[in-house]
Length: 163
Image (cartoon, rainbow, N blue to C red):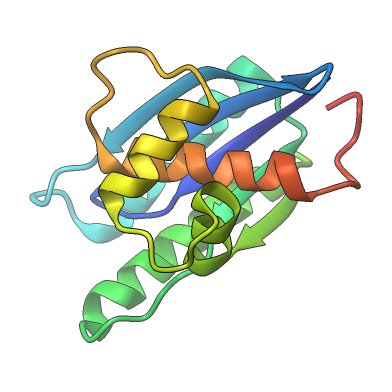
């Protein structure tokens, strides 16, 4: 059995998923869109993200982290804040001994849909075909985290079979 924590990084909205693979079958154990309020100072938001990551790791005991790499857009201020959130997440996971696997948005789109220019609706549709997702999961961030986790489970041969 392999169990991983998958993350779609952000500081306002953080996509989180716990996936498990046993006997070749993937299963979603948990997903959430963890939100922080804009009224909270950025450094406190980062602390809240780190605490939530540690809470999820302690509860579900994954051995690996799959995280999306940062795609720089035109808003450098936002990109820097997301990079800082990634740092807090990576530090939290690393401090608890998780092995880290990173994927670009292109790698995730190709792994999940077979097409590197898939849009959000195509990604969500394909995620729902690949793994059972409970009704009511409406946040793009959750689907992005699940897609990142599916990419990891499909592509990493070195994942421990005892994760």
